[in-house]
Image (cartoon, rainbow, N blue to C red; front, side, top):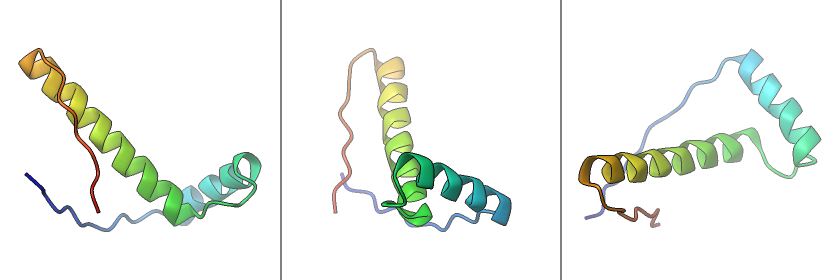
Length: 67
């Protein structure tokens, strides 16, 4: 089953400033705040869903992002 999830995340200026500072130190500004937040939310959500399904069913279930 494919499920399309589309939403907007709003970050305050203080948050974006801190993320930008982190990105400049770690990624040498090769990743934008938008790219970082999107990747973080997608990977975290997929990982949490896999872990939850494993805990509930007792077996591992693979969840992958498709485009």
